[in-house]
Image (cartoon, rainbow, N blue to C red; front, top):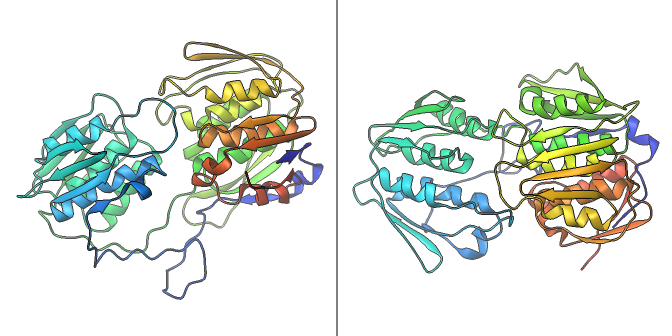
Length: 391
């Protein structure tokens, strides 16, 4: 439940991204951000429904299980209901690599008795999880695999770079064409992995500062990963300062400076390095504070404006025409009961509630924890009046 606005002490606080520092992991480590993953004694190749249904990214176990063990069963994934995100591209790619795949009983059944064999895979459309799945599957395949129309998102790049650090022969990382020279079944030995900072989490907190027109510092961000977000915030009228940091992994600290006037904007979501669809909902909330008509065009998913009706319950002036939303502002939002429909809608409603008059109660908030760590405590530290209750 959120009440009122973020107070002025927001200007004196910092937010640390989830993954800004990582030390060598020990079994007795008490750092909650350090995890030991031991796959030496895997005794099952079935990813059951109760695990997979909670997060769509669980489909990413398909490639690794299949290429290592020659067979697997993976439940069809769950996650946010933001339109059709079929697993067809994953299935087709595994078939091209030599696997026999069928879907029955809500599970993907895949088998490659003689192992996977490298080939050319051309994706009909750019797919982040599809690219990562094929890269991992191809890692232990025999021969060369070439992925054409590969995703270039930072998360895909890290998967490739970690495999390369583990000894895999892979080239074209970060380009539309990736080449993987498989090990023929030989397992890779991974060093300690340092997860990149979450660019969407960072962008969300920058939007928290923006929607309240406060100065805020977000630490441990890779600037290149959020350039499209920063450019849009500057277009709206906010200042951006890059602060000095001793971090050796290219992470930087960013300070957002308040705007004299928040101007309306236009956004078209697209693949990286374009504006991320995962920031669309947060900017829709922000647009209610901007002067004039803002336009948001969603090009990646056909059902990703479900948060618009909930923002309208708070008083937002939003009109939807197919895949384009027009938001007229500024509007004084009024607290109400609203429902989170997906992960990013959850954060957008929290942002809107920060500037809404009165109390806003957000239901179905369970979506939130898949993408944000302790968001309520972080915002509370910045001066927000927010607490989590039970449904």
